[in-house]
Image 1 (cartoon, rainbow, N blue to C red):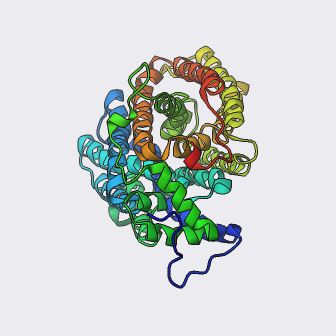
Image 2: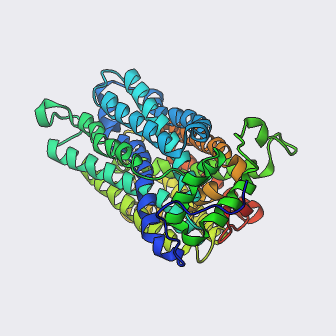
Length: 474
């Protein structure tokens, strides 16, 4: 096979690949709708928790299972989609994910028991898990090295915007109906409308996936090099033929990775795979999703009304968006590792403070911590500062690293394994929070603070800087 490919008919190579940045950004934004749905689907449950517990007379354990059932589906979806994405392509996998999101929104809205709600949430989780693997892999493969960190951060920005929109929708519906338990438009209960609100973005995602190009690295792996060249001319300019050769060499022909390719080292897997797994799990063990899944009931527990609690949660999600934008600005300038280290230090301090405040607070007649006066204000500030430190570090940077740290030959498969571990960790944290809350919030935040301390050690010891490196050199 020749090492230099001809430009597709009608194509004129350009000398400045920077002129293609606009198209690359548009493609990445469309792909990142999957991240939006990822955030939306996982956070929309926040405003429904109290209503679901009341309507279905759910115990803490049953409620925890319903909330976190989507995460089991996410783990399955994340593990499965690596094989699917390597066989049918990244964009077709996005379409499959959009179908799962659509079915989940409909089924959850029409749920008649906590158990069928859990099933439909699991279906949505399949889409979330698929998006959590396909989106960062696709963006990493479509973006040039000098833009990759910022474009890969769009995944996390889309996630936090999805969280924000879900919480805003929850608040708007609760405000319009008076409570998530009250009937709204057409007599349909508020919490059901909260789930239905996921339909428009789910359909938009599937439609958008039809119009973006396939990953050039996937096309080369399938022997479709002329198609890959067409895509690369749009995003790389006149370096496209050279890039095709580099991709071909890194892939070593048309090879579909297997789980056996991940094996090696002292603990059964290649060291880079273990690093990805632990990195992904630590993102969840620091407890971030407790803030977004349970914050409304958490703030109600310390004296805020349902609507005030939702407002606080919306403010927190806005904070998350702003700090993610900060990460996008600095991830290709400062680097991945420094941001992780700074974030770990900040999270450890703020979580430690929350553990102290909730652990030493007096209890009210119902046995709940009563944070009053300065203690309540301090807890509110600490919780939002925690989101700040997470938002510019472990939130976006983990997805950037997972999308780029693995070699080309095993990227989708290794990323799917790491993402599966992340969702299992997410499930563990989310399912255990209701019983931990009953035991004492000080214990819960103490465990998350310990995880943040370990994340600092892990980042310093095991994370290697990938800023500015081409994927083919990983």
